[in-house]
Image 1: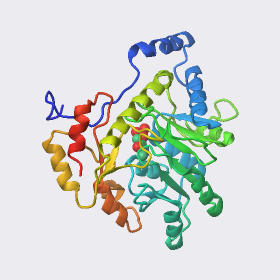
Image 2: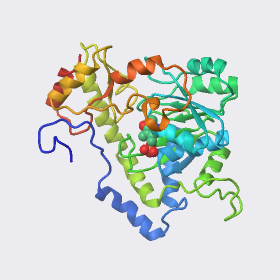
Image 3: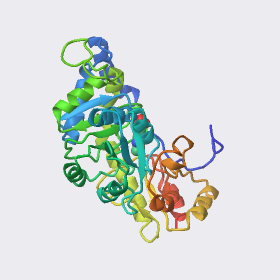
Image 4: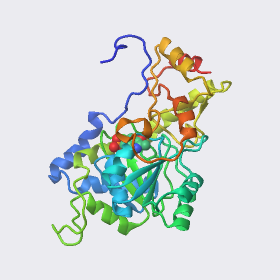
Length: 363
Ligand SMILES: *Cc1c(COP(=O)(O)O)cnc(C)c1O
């Protein structure tokens, strides 16, 4: 319960997942097959459909997005060394890096795309004490990462790249060797409750990563060939996944029209939406970048109008006590821009009048 319960406040997010009736046909298939986990028939179908959607040859399903990043980093970097990553990300990225046995090295972001770029990483390489074991590139709130530019970086430096594209499941096309990690959390576009996936064009790597999600059993039955753990997706979660894919075109259309509604309203404003948001890619967490020096007044106006807002990623990884001590470069862009990135109310129950009210608070 929050303070606004029962009043006319505008909520920042409402997840939208398949309802019971849509799940029943899939649940009956579980009853019939009596397989509940361990890469069962629903998981196989879900993984095949995810592969079709993203044009990835290899798909590894995981129990959540954080586990996907951990498995991918262990698979490509062997669970040791420095991992370059942007400070500006959801804190799960840093947990995944340390859980994978690596030390995060926090870098700054590009002001326009809000992401780590190959150029920022190249500059960091010149002054690092050691050669990093991997780079974790983060998609900003569902924007498609520049897979091609990072493939060039990987080819040129030999440093493995992993994508934390947690919120970008529906924006990913043309996956290469570098693993692309997705989250299927309820707050992502393809939400199933809890779940994740790793995409790659390298089928052998996908086979290894899938084995790592199930105690490293590979080749001979019940013989652990690689270290891993249990981060599989259950058949029940796969059932939700299949129903979520059935409903995805409708959901994407609604998200698109909402985002375009905001875009139209913000036409004459100095606040900007992320490039392409609502146009070329869809998100569940629509953010506005406010003009310099206006974050405080804007959040005060939103509060007064009973409009919820959220800094989905906070002020950067280095501001979290658990990661205050990790090594980092200087982060001037992150410091300047993170306070100005605000998540706006964004869900399918938002009315036109409520969107007017939100836009009216923004410079
Ligand atoms: C949601 C998210 C994650 C974590 O995914 P979970 O499925 O919640 O574990 C990691 N990184 C980013 C950028 C995210 O948005």
